[in-house]
Image (cartoon, rainbow, N blue to C red; front, top):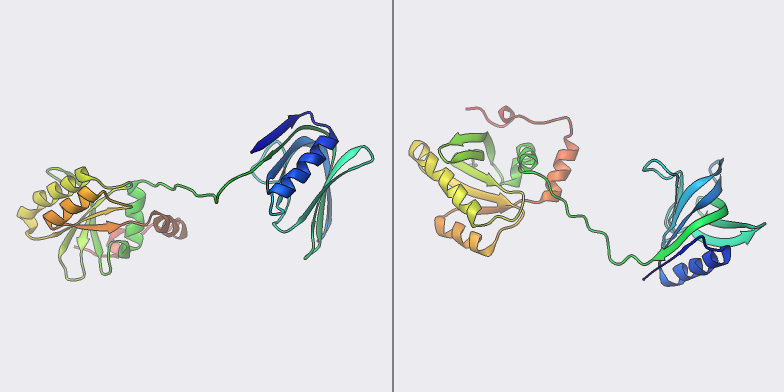
Length: 256
C-alpha cells in the first residue's frame, strides 16, 4: 500500500507519519528544512532542499540534491517523532546509547509519501566468464582440490578452451565455463573441445563449470562420462574483491 500527498499540510504529514509507524511503512519527506545534530559533537545545516527517509526500524536518512551519501543519518533503533513547533514541522530522531539526536525543521514540504516495502532485499548478481576464470585462477579449489591451471583460452579446432589444467593425479582437465545455467549446447561444446585435444593428449577429464545446469544437460554429461561443477558466483565476487590489484598469473600455479 502506498499513499502520497503533494504540497501537504503539516497536519496531513503527522497523520501519515503515525500511519507509517503503526503499519511498519517507510516515510518520505521532500521539502525545505534545516538540520541540527547533537551527540558526539554539535553540527548544523542551513535551510535547503532535502529528502528525508524514515524507515520502520528507526533508521533515518537525510539527503541533499546531490551525492550518494546522506548529509546526516541515524541507525536502526532510533526513536522518531514528528510535531509542529512555532509554525514549523519538526522531525526528530533520538538514539539513546551513545546519545545522538538529529532534528530536521521544515518550513515547507512539497511531498510526503508512505509505502510498505515487502520482503527481504535480494540482489541478483551476475559476472562474466572472464571474471569467473580469474576467481578460479586465484582459488583453483573452486573446481576441485588439487586442481592446477595450465592454460586459458587455448585455441583448438572447434574454438577456444576456457581453461585447462592438471588434477591432483596429473591428469589433464578441460574446463568449460558458463556464467549462467548450462544447457545441452554447453555440453556439446565441451565434448567438441575434448575431441579436438584427444589425438594429441590422449585420455582426459572434462568439467562443465556453471552456477547451475539443466536436467537434460546433466544427464548428457553423465552419458558422455563428463563432470559438472557448481560455481558459486557470490564466492567468486568475494575472491575477486579480496584480491583487487593482486591478479595471479598462471605461472604461479604451474609451468610446463
